[in-house]
Image (cartoon, rainbow, N blue to C red; front, side):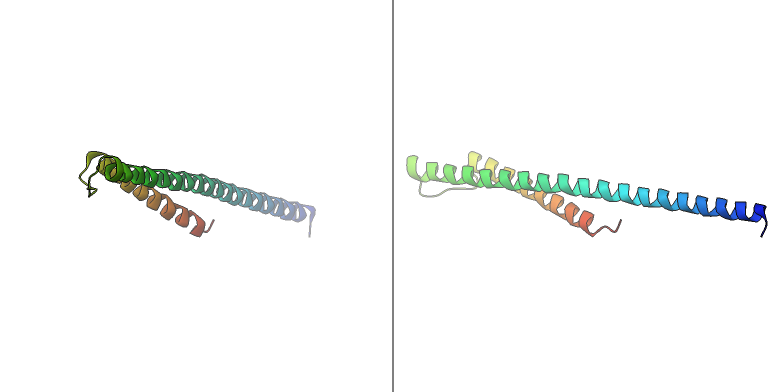
Length: 111
């Protein structure tokens, strides 16, 4: 094996090592990004869960107001205030479902 052959072999090994390093760095970057996105989604989910809880509390307070203070025997979903709260709960729940599905996809992704 001559010097040129050794030089070529070394050059090939170095290029292969550099390419492997680039590939690993790229995969690590993609994994880090995925984990960051999972963290943001988890935080969004917690916020939505808190929002839904507060909306349920508002709905309960409104029902109590209708029953107790206004003396109505029935709470209707057609009541403008009740309907508005129910619409907010529905929208928040749909958003929560989307975020949870997106988080599941991110966790299942093979990077």
